[in-house]
Image: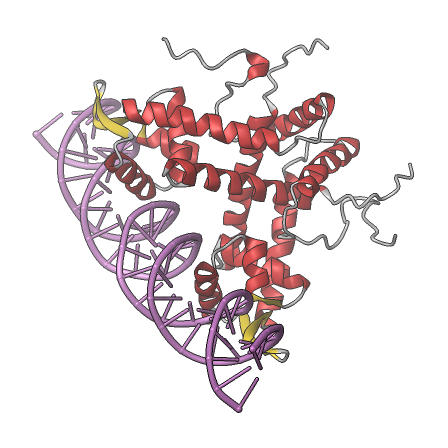
Length: 162
Length: 162
DNA sequence: CGGCGTAGTTCGCTGTGCGAATTACCGGCT
DNA sequence: AGCCGGTAATTCGCACAGCGAACTACGCCG
């Protein structure tokens, strides 16, 4: 297969640089709402449901002590709350406060908006293809659910009905 | 067009989660060679050519003071060197040391290897499509060259013989 | 020469992330 | 019951990351 080089880059560089873009979006989006990217990511994970520290650590790929600190600071900001786990006295469930829930929604929405803008020049079919290809990568590599799918303002797809 | 939902995710979540993967690769790869992800990224940028602080800041999207610190620490590790700019007494050119060049090559190679493994389940045509789609996003959004291309599809490594 | 803009550094601060050590508890075993 | 290994989470000390404000030193225009 002869691919004529229209200035395209390899898949490795493409992945790295698109990741750079996404990181920048998290940073900007976070700054807009007065949270760090990490705290924003934490909020997004907790949007789905409250979570134990262990599970959070696995999801965010953080060492226990790192997570303790992150939750501490986010709690100090009034965005999350530690609740005792009724089943296990040792364990803790981290949940969004009311303010945290509100902020999480805004941060999430803004982040989605900005990220949807990245492939603005792609037509719907291309976006679909991209989502499909990246989706396979994400699944094959068992990426934790650091970002839940909420609405599909994007298009007709993702009706999680079946 | 009815596309049956095989569990695919939206393009936003796909981008976010794949970025998460790439970030993890940088972290692991860096750990393997005793550098932080940021320092590794700095090395990768400098692989192409020495660079002034201003240009580095623009490429890495860091504030001046942040970059001073990053270069300080990387210099302390013996990986980069500050050289005076012959044209401008104020300016500085940051260049790889010999050890830095060596380590950059290894870090770069290892990072490429790991990132190439991410889409292992995609056949060549799919990878090609992915590279094309992400490449357009990267170009449209003017992502700085935080990762130079030097992989096999273009021929063996960047000629450093210069 | 005077003054403005630019290139980098310094300083103080908050946040991030880790490993080792510690505390408190669960659960199985005797 | 009592013990004890494993688990959940915190604490502590450390190095790194990133920022803004203030500062130095130089280039450059007039």
